[in-house]
View 1 (cartoon, rainbow, N blue to C red):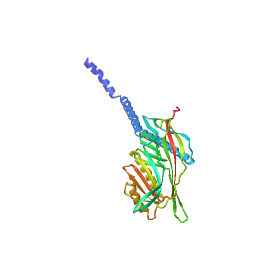
View 2 (spheres, rainbow, N blue to C red):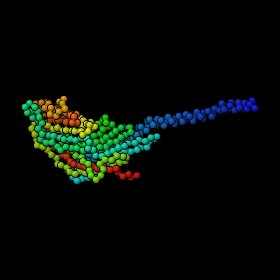
View 3 (cartoon, rainbow, N blue to C red):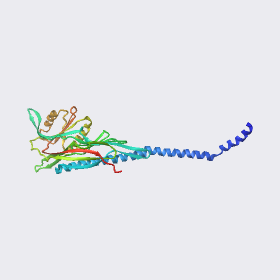
Length: 347
């Protein structure tokens, strides 16, 4: 019986070995599966990240533009001296986008911020008393505080913050790159008949406070609505002209150390403007404001007033920029309140 079975099975094995069509189909199937898997892997490492990055850039640029529009509206209310006015403005929050073989998820928050920067602008002149230059204040602005902070956690771009404070709009990319998008300080320079430049500084800055009756911060997906109420706007104030050398000191204080880079970004922006106006920077090598004023006074005491210097006090977390040759100051501020709520979905 075994011999008979062996004779029957041998031809069958030989026939299977000769069936090349079956082998070809199996190989083709494996090749196709490999191609599909390679295409899917390529999509995951190229198409999906590229698509997600484009979505994230479009999203945070939209948020940036929306907050720029909020700043512009506040500027208009300040310029028009409008009080008891409320406006509502949409701001994008996070999203969850379904992509091929994956999701792009952005988590975001928006709201009133009281942990950031404060600003004070002082105007006066420096005099030499017994060999020491000191600053005589003629005017100190109100302390400008409060702000609006958007924080988005992006899957590919990391943390993006858009921060509005004191009329300044900042962009922070992943806590490494800080950019000033708009500032509320303007320098006006004109030349009189004798050829001397007359330089003025005009600042328009809002105080931001938390509103009542609604939330002051939200987080989530979709869209939020900012409610901005202009409580009061003060008319522009110009302190009386002072003797030479006249000086403006801008103080920027960070309540928390994480906001110091915002302050530094604003100082850098002001430095760029002054250098474009052909100002000269004075090196003072001190963190003490009085000592810096003394060194600065000896530098401009000879009559070259168009100079500036920067002081940073690490202990008090304060930046100062001292600007000479400012002939007049115009300062205006207003009091604004902020509320925010999640916008109802329309889907």
